[in-house]
Length: 479
Image (cartoon, rainbow, N blue to C red; front, side, top):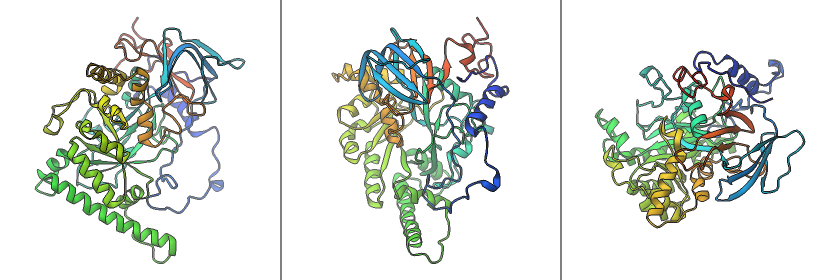
């Protein structure tokens, strides 16, 4: 049975039907009795998903075997198939090609003049932490009380009923997103990766097996926030000094715990913030670093070598085009905008060719939103960057550009073995577009997550709406 969402129900107040389904999907039909539950393992600080005190309860919604035919396919890894066919069943991609046989009873959809892609992955979002309505009471994305807040976790602020989630699904084809703390702090805390599904709790959205991230920031934000309070850091050199001192503490913390776990003895004092940094030093938590200027990104990569960690991705990275070779050499990705710039000094040296220049340099590059509206049109943002590159003489194919939306962010999040491309065995996170997805006229027609149809533009029961859209054209309530 496929999920059916109520038509015309308010997401914030009348989600009973869909949330009941979410309850079944995420909690399971039967729970073990308390006395039969598996004992909680002994915590090992830093081991972020070997022991997670807030484990994922995500369970896919039920889907049906589905075959899409006669469709143009971008496989997410740079491949394109004309007049293609795609089969998925039991939540997984089964086969992609031009001659795929449907099993008996499968739903067959004609994709003539349409496009099929992996679901979009947004590596930089604050949905749920800064939900709609955007009021101070709901503003929970930044613990701006000190420059080092590695102890906070973004997931503990996520409000699953944020209508931004359903907008990103229906308007943008976004199936996975990373929720990050804000950028006031040098160490902002842990991020969390979510599947974009309906659930009562963030644990019910939590991407199973995805590594945590550590949000860091450099540049203007931390020096402005804390310098204005008359405390360190108030300069860029202050930023680096606090970073290095914090990492030095983390190295010593890790040494003590490693020794204890090997040799026993007195248990070291537990520090929740240092647990996160120890996880980074152990390679289990991925650094996601807010940074604009090329020189600062180079300094951060040197600092990472000093203390023995790696930056998974620089976010915003307005000047990444200047150091594509350094990013490639360090195995560090850049998540950028198409043309968002000029709102502060460190964002001025921007060019529209940033993404294609990074691609030409062989670096791992991707688009990101950092915005509740931008997340709904990331395909158009890539189209702008792609067009700018072509005007500058860089002939990058549409299929290759789609890696900026799915496969590369999956790599930077440590989940490329599970999603991000249409390869057999991966999660069936799939979008059927009604047009060329790089057209301004393109909209998702259908969106599947783990093979379950969660959005269908042609079915009012699968077009989620909220209190903010009720009665608007296209919501299902106005003809």
